[in-house]
Image (cartoon, rainbow, N blue to C red; front, side, top):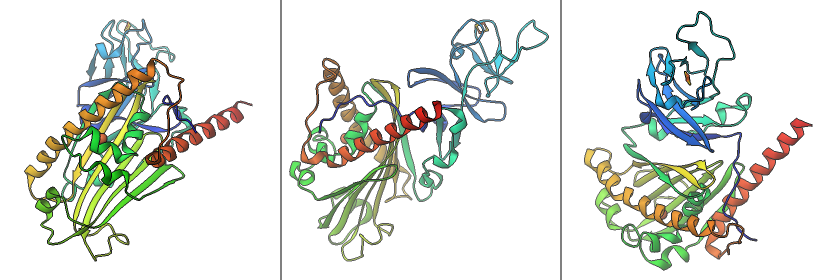
Length: 356
Ligand code: FES
Ligand SMILES: [Fe+2]
């Protein structure tokens, strides 16, 4: 089997459009998703909205304008649009023709995410949004987060996270470790209905110094790395360790060392994406500095990944159709790629059937 790098998109799906705090009251955010320039802002009720970033009057970008009481005001001739995209004010006009509107996209704000649906609005089903309750629980999961623009296809992020053998090479100067540790590890990987999942266990192991320091383990631990790819483009990560003999495999959710990461890759164009990550400290919740330290340790590792992904894309762009080679450690990555292809094929078949 060969792996090409440019995946088409799943259209009818929720993508992470922005972190909640990127869209300030009274401000707006310019962001391109799937080659569509968008403006995110909050209406007078504080509700997040996303519109096509193109005024229906003369085509000016709405992001050149300002958020006013009634909505977003175009910076060219002052038309104002509300969160549904409807024009609510035309300077000098007594009435507003109903076709004076711009396209709006369904958005749902919850758990510090602003999710956006780029496909057919009628199909937007909120029940399909990933549930990530840890963001709501600041006491148990104090966390930090970031948006990072990356110049590569969005699936590079999924590839990167579904294969941890890169840690020893890409992150040799940071979180690295022994090159053999991950490549020889037994990994249990499978496709799921919504993507792919893998878990890697290291049993009866000496806890790494950071785990030791944070939790004060007295002896060896059972450690795991748990990664779930959820289509279209999120990866949910849970690293943990508990004392040996406490039945970690049967119950991971018990006191010990816990670190949760949420990753989402939202396509900006075919060859660029928005990387959103959050990291939740589940080991030293009472120490306010611990989460800052976590950020300062983890943020540089994403820059290391960024450099690799952008380098890959630059080379692949020179010869995009040339197939890539698959090696044994690509098992989980291959499950993720197979899953996204299957879901895209299903969506296409469904749309073709609907069009008949
Ligand atoms: S282009 Fe927007 S008001 Fe004229
Ligand atoms: Fe990495």
